[in-house]
Image (cartoon, rainbow, N blue to C red; front, side, top):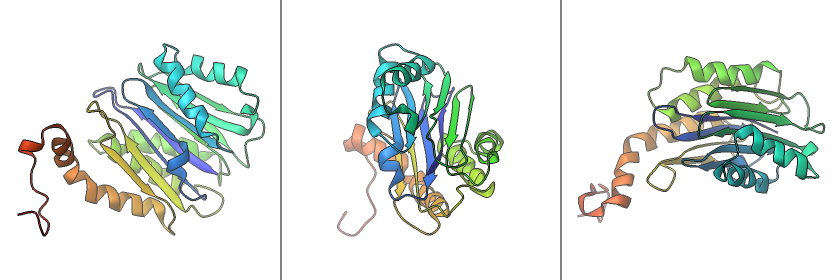
Length: 224
């Protein structure tokens, strides 16, 4: 019950993923990113272990397609799953099993992989990719949120969505952005508002982790 986009930034080699679902807390189950390795989604009737397995295979040298082919060939429940992956060279792969729910779709481009199920229409997947390409955002996170909003405008899921998530990797060793709306009436709008709050503070929190002696103050009561 999810539509998602995994992306690689060819300039920074960062990976990001954005998604929304009618189910609660979708980001906790479906987003799998590893800086320098790739990004993967495991959704529909979700098995989070598969996302991590895809990343392990890509880290061992498999391409995105090879990693998905291995999972498809060896995972007995794969026909209930929907998978996508983008590797460190920007190669993308997608898979939808025979038991994927409702109207579903998939599309891959260089550096991008989009999949969705229980969709209002098949055009939602094209809207994700096209919305990413049309975004005027300078940041991978901006482009991903614009893509998600475009997918929602195109119809999104057949029913209302309730959760959304956005994660972007970084070479510093942890995701520079990891935002989640676990249950809300307008999760995509709420996710954008979270990003607008987080974005101007993001680099300050990187500095606090890497070089706390030069970190800016928090500007809150008690920080004097």
